[in-house]
Amino acid sequence: MTAITSRADVATDKPVAYMRQLCKHFGHKVDASFGEDSGHIQFDFGRCELHASNGTLALEISAADAESHDRMERVIGSHLERFGRRDGLAVAWQE
Image (tube, rainbow, N blue to C red):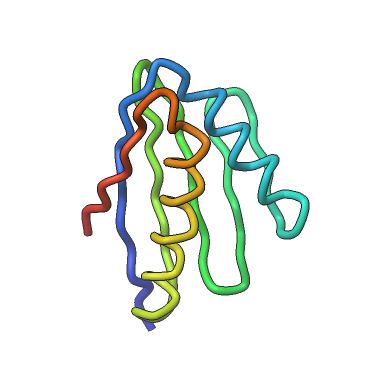
């Protein structure tokens, strides 16, 4: 079975800080880790790969089915937007 994937490139002056915040937040309940400019979050229902570069936090999610994929988009997107409310972060997923 092929995984359903999507990606969002989020413009931010603090990509590394937001990547770390997401990984630390979810790391209390699921497998999550990060290095200097990349990380991952592994849920039972999908996975998110994070890559921080100059001015952008790239999010790549994958899940086995449409319901899990939609859930991944909602969970990761809503948390990042909430964490980055002051900076006006917006997550727009592209398949």
